[in-house]
Length: 602
Image 1 (cartoon, rainbow, N blue to C red):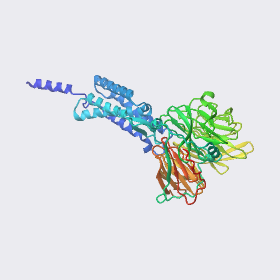
Image 2 (tube, rainbow, N blue to C red):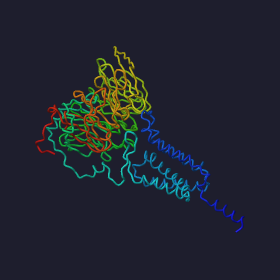
Image 3 (spheres, rainbow, N blue to C red):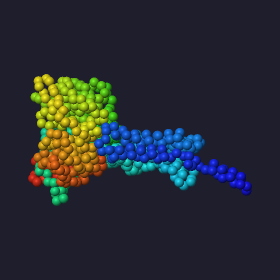
Image 4 (tube, rainbow, N blue to C red):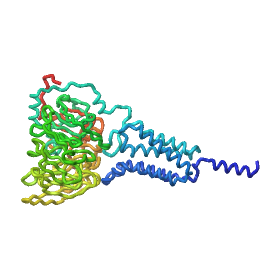
């Protein structure tokens, strides 16, 4: 073979090489993949992030993946034929995967996991082809198939408070399906006389207890749980939902989802057995929080008031669950369902039941006649809110306070007239309760980068004046309500429990990573009970100088955002999968004792 022939053969071999040569510009794709991974974990990297941080977490990975697709199509420097083949491979494998996905995987997971993993597999295949000197498109499409195919193995079950996606194996049944498929259980035949007697003994009327301040009267709770651990009284499967409990005597009321029905359910406080259930055909499929009602039932003057996630306001007979009246707020008030559903637990003041319905427009807060559901008044208060109306007592009259995206609004509960507005816009959502301090001050909590503010309100005749005392970003509670005790404010700064000096707004301590949990104050014992997002109960001392954990116990399994309830020494907890009751150890007999079930009724 001549020298010219050898040169020609070498040139031919060079031209026949796959396009994973030095002309391929791979670094932009690798950089985009790294940025996408980091954006999905920004909540871990940036503790005090702004309110829009969740949008970066949700949309960052898919945005970087789309940019990687643009890189491949226009900027990768590979031959046009190979770019087209690669593009068709991405589109084809992505389309097939989308068809085969579990239906729960559409939405956030598709953007945060499925498509980013597919693109990551594609870029990884290109990189390996250069390293192994193998055909580029073959490995790239194989990587794409593996990346997309990962999502086929799972089912989406919502997000944790830090926006971490919760996945479960696709073949495992959901907690809700296990509840629906269980055999018919015999209802608890609690005698009507006992039910009537219970309704006259309301111990926890609804959301966060009396006056919605998260305060429980305790009976000298023993905190040495190693020697004297709490005793589990019962544990039951329960449908999805973020409701808490209303409790009267032997009756426990809550709301939950069961298939295509939202339910108001009454359980026996002694046994956990179901006494009655009321069904409404409605289901909110929120891709972040999951399905189920958000509000908590309210007991008031012998009736039970509930608000479902799609806006169905009910007045029920708590004895048997029968409807007294019903209002479909979106239908009758021409409103749409808010992004994360209707969340306001009904507030009863005098003759009115008051709820907030998020959406832009003039009608935001609704006052209905408690006796028959007739609409009495409406008021404007912010474009959206996931807080519940709360009673205030500034001056000689009562007011209704509501926190919205625009700030604080005080309303006359009889007429619906707006008495005072304090503007403090927040670009995210407000899903917290205001905190009363004395008879003149109110705390406005806000999370996601905005912080907390203390106001002083003066009422002189018909004139209201509002003065800001302090604003701090040392306490940015997301949807985890705060507690006020002896001149201090306790709550979650993002996911870490924190103590704030009410006089100055300065932080006293910040310790205890409990996720996005909820807390309960026991002022007589100087204790705080924190139910963590992971279902662990932690008992803290209210010491304003130090964070002191006195006792801990894992009480629930799964994501727990629901508020705990303590009645005497009986603690009631639940999440979107199960509910349980514990008898806590005490140093003396409980102040509130439930009667012993001697009838054998179940």
